[in-house]
Image 1 (cartoon, one colour):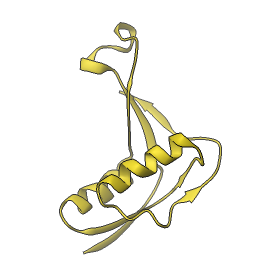
Image 2 (tube, rainbow, N blue to C red; image 1 turned 90 degrees about the horizontal axis):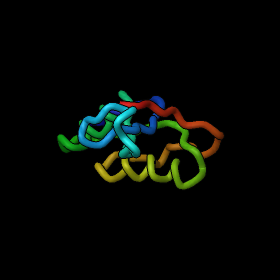
Image 3 (cartoon, rainbow, N blue to C red; image 1 turned 60 degrees about the horizontal axis):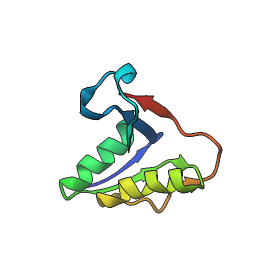
Length: 90
């Protein structure tokens, strides 16, 4: 199966050990977003998937790209640039 997903990849900041934000002095960083998660899930089930989005052209953007690529998702169509990346807290 070949699937292409298109959407925003976001930086996810999570407190360690399920602490409340007020109880924590740091965050664990990972990347996600509905479309990226679908592409990763399909790639993990041995499907061919690609993810299309735009990431920052800096180490944060490259880390987001690397995270998706790590699971076998094709990222050759990703754009680089801009000055913002969505962030959500958990």
